[in-house]
Length: 552
Ligand code: F6P
Image (cartoon, rainbow, N blue to C red; front, top):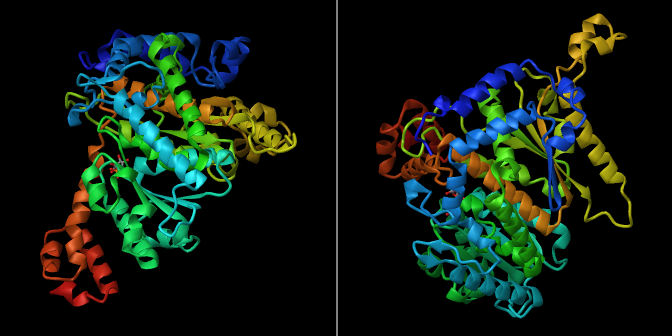
C-alpha cells in the first residue's frame, strides 16, 4: 500500500506530466475535438448512468489513473476488505459492511467465523419486529398501535437512516410518522415530542457504542417523558435499541427482545445497512429495505469483480484524486436535483470527511499529498440561488457532482412539468460550468461589464442519473460513494475507517463540564485552561448567575 512514495511512482509522474499539458486545455475544445467524448467517458450500470465527460480529463488520463490505482494496490485492498482482513489497523478491526447487504449464500469471514449466520439471524429478527410494529401486533404499554417512530442517534447512527428514510418517503406507510433527534439542545427533542402521543410512540436508541454523550442525553430525556406520561413499566414497550454494547442497552431498561446487535466491523458511517436502518425498515417495510440492500449488493458485486478501468467506484475515486492532487481542488460540491435526495450531501459529508480527513498514512508517516476534500452541497435548485455564483466565477475551481433522477416517484398522473424544470436546470448548470462564456461572445455588452459577465468555464463536473429514486437505485448510489471513498483512501495510503480526530474535543468537553456546575471544581478547571477558553466559560457562568465562582 505505502511501499513507495506516491510521488516516486512512475504512474504518478506520468500523471504530473500529463496534467501539465491538460492544464492548458479547455473542456470546450476537448468536446469539439472528440464527438464521441460522452460515449467514451460515461458509464451505465443497472438503473444508474454516470457521465464524467465534463471533467478536465481524457481517455488517456483515465488509463494513467487506473495505472496509479493498480500501483497503489487497490485490487489487493479491495480483496482484503471482502476477505474480512483487519484493514482498520488502528482499531484492529475488519471492515465488512458489505456483509450486511450480502443476500447471497456466500459466507463472509471475520477471524475465521462466518458472520453471515448472525447477520441473517438479526435481519430476520428485525423484519419480525418491524412487521409487528407496522401491523399493530406490537403495541405501546396501553395497547395502542404505534404511530410515531423517533430515532435517537448522531453521526452515522442518524445521518444515514435519516437520509434513507427521507429519500424513500414515497414508500413510507401513511399511518406512521418518523422523526430523527440528534442535537442535545433540548429544543429539538421538545419540538418533536410536542407533536406526539406518548402511548403511540416508539423510540429507537441507535448507538454503536451506547456511550455517545448526545445520544445518551436525548435517550434519557425520552425515557423521562415516557415515565412521566405512562409510568416506569411502560419503558420496555416504547424503546428499542441498536448497539454493540448490549449490556448498556439492557441497563437502560430495554428488554433483550427489542435490542438488536451490530458489530465492531461495521463503522458508524457505513451502518445504515445494519439494524441502524430499523427506523427505515419500520417506516417503509422490510420488503423495501430488502430492495435497498439488493442495490447495495449489486454495487458490491460490480466493485469486487470489475477491472479497475471499468469499475464505477474506482472511476469516481480516481477522478476525485485527479482534481484534488493535480488541480489543487480543495472541495467537492454534492448537488442533488431531486427533493428526495436533498439529505445526500450531509450523509456524504460524514462518509467522506470522517473517512479520509487524515494526515498520516497507515504506517504513521505523514501523507504526501492532499487527502479527502471538503464535502459540501445542498439541493441543486436552492443552491443555484445561493452558492453557485462561487462555483461559476470564483478563482477557486470546485468540482461538482450533480445527481438527478429521470423519473419521479411522487409525480402523479403523468405531470412531468416539474421534472422538466429540474433537469433542464441541472443539465444547463453542467453545461455552463463546462463551457463558460467567452468575452468574444459579449460583443453587444458595454465594455465595462464584459469582465463581470464573462465566465471562464472549464470547470469540472460529474453527473449521476438514476432512472428513479427507487430503494434499489438508492442502495447502489450509497454503496457507490462508500467504495469511492475507500479507493481514495487506498491510493492516499490512509486508514479510511477510524476517526480519532473527533476524540480530543469529546475529552475536553467532558473535562469542562464540572466547571459549569459552579462547584469546587470551577476554579481548578478555569486555571487549567488558556485565557480564551477560560473567558468563554466565565461568560457562561455569568449567564448562569455563577459569576462569583468564575472570579474566586
Ligand atoms: O464521534 C464520531 C462518531 O463516533 C461517529 O463515527 C459515529 O457515527 C457517531 O460518533 C455516533 O457513534 P455511536 O453510534 O457510537 O453513538
